[in-house]
Length: 162
Image (tube, rainbow, N blue to C red):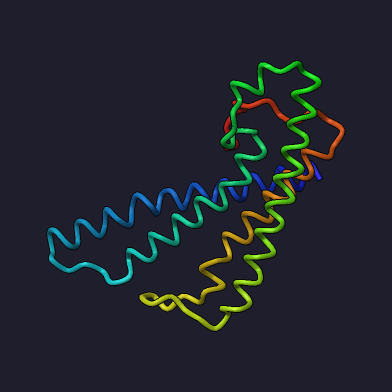
């Protein structure tokens, strides 16, 4: 499982990095085309929105693996080590369960809206929502795996993934 998680982190990290690059490049292109040539590209806003969706949802598992997700670390770190580790395990397992519920709801939403498409670029809804489903599914597995394994959960502020 550690080897699978290693490769999942690397692949998702590269995809998230490319999405971040697209979030910088696409609006810049739109500003130049609109301001200089007075010829904006139709649908570039929608593709930028999809890049943001990819970045946020596929980047979520990376935060879980390094324990850098939003939490009250200042208070949790003041607890005794055994209590802190137990609390972190409970939080990870509860978060994994909550993420599985979100994945289930997202899958049902994709199935209900399978035939719909985005208005501008005509992207199928399932393609548009797939990063959310994949990112949260990987994050749920990561939370459960880190919470249930014998090793201690990672301490916050880990090193960068890539």
